Amino acid sequence: MVEAPEISGFPDAEDGKNFVVASIVTGLAFAAFYQDFTVSGLAFFSLASAAIVFSREVGVRSAVNLLDGYVDLEVSSSGATTTLFGAILSIASGIGVILLFPLFSEASRERYEQWGKSTDVIWARYSFYISALGIVALLFSWFITYSLELTQLAQMYGIFAFFQMMPFDYSGIPTGPLDGAKIIRWSGFYWLLFTGLSLLAIVLTL
Image (cartoon, rainbow, N blue to C red; front, top):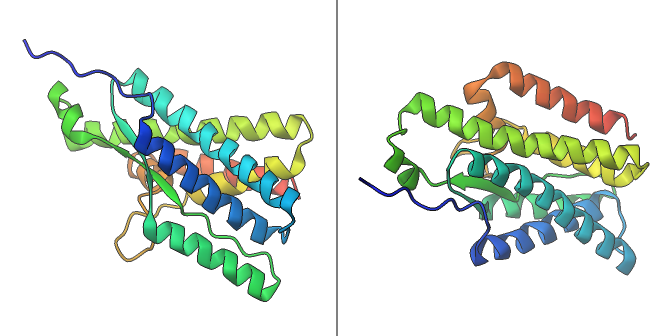
């Protein structure tokens, strides 16, 4: 009898490093978007971005623990570069421009195949659950911050969720495989639902 592998919902050192990098890149993008480069502003956006990334991680890792799966937090070098380019463009133009593609989650298919669940349909559903719970965690965090009248932080949650819902998973687009690509691959309805909720989250904080 083959012994099942341990569940790796708890992040390792590489996840921790990627978490810090993603938080910093996201924080710089938000600082440029809101045109606030004061010391207090940079500290706020960095900490707020860390909270946003952490919220998504809680959702994603809760899903993989429930599904007996494995997942890693990855920093997309092309996505992070695109994010920083958007920040530079925002500073240079003086217009609020933001592009948020610094991170993605990569499930470990090789380990998951030990359970004999590697068919395309099952894998698509597995990826859907992981990404969907990450988005739900972001929207739930938006609701909490919005209810507490932390309007700017709530808006940041909405913007981050919206960018994560973009259905990008193509070599010609400078991002990693975003949550939206995994969700739409399984359910167009949920993609429309989560994208609509993300847009509503932003509109309500304007």
